[in-house]
Image (cartoon, rainbow, N blue to C red; front, side):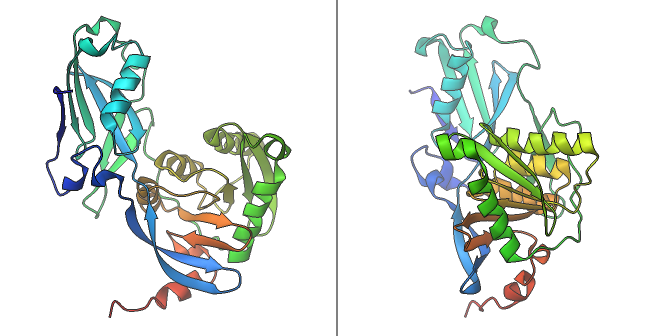
Length: 297
């Protein structure tokens, strides 16, 4: 495809080729908790997550979130599935800029473009004091305020909650085809929900709390899904300070969690261990363990 170009304008030279270093996971630090061995420091690898805004014939068309490799395949496939690209010959040009998260597309016939507002658009806000950018969808009326909460839980309670998530769904036990989630206080399970969609699990929790007038500022959510940027954003909108996950976080998910005041625990497994990535002050014993990090020497 000689009309497909990758542009890199900054330090992310590793991402300029679709099959190159963009597949290398980012390295982050975490506090690892094991029920037998206690706390230890870990260097963990987390996958990248890229918001990519597609402009078709100079019109902002849609924003999607995808893995930061083979982006041209995602863009072309999406446009074809939406009827914007009839075939290969109708694609006149595709410029993908991974640094800015933009795909500039020129097609032969733009008459099939859906009406304005049919797809999510992107809102980019400056990240205070970090020199980075925050990503939200334009459909968000306003970015959520950072969550502030003094709630604290024990590591053992986080492990117990995840065991409840993984064992609590009869549908999962029979089919393996749903996500599940728990809403809890620091000592009591309040709700259990399951659904085929991980976003839907959180929406079910939020909807029940709205209907019953439940304050979420001192609650914990444990759920089975990956901690992506959209999940963290949804949890922040709910005002929940602690998120415990069975699965992995993404780099952008952790960035959003730091900005939005969310404690993220992930890789919570077998009732024995987890990794703590952000706001350790809400997990009893974690701050003391963090202070014991060995020196670089």
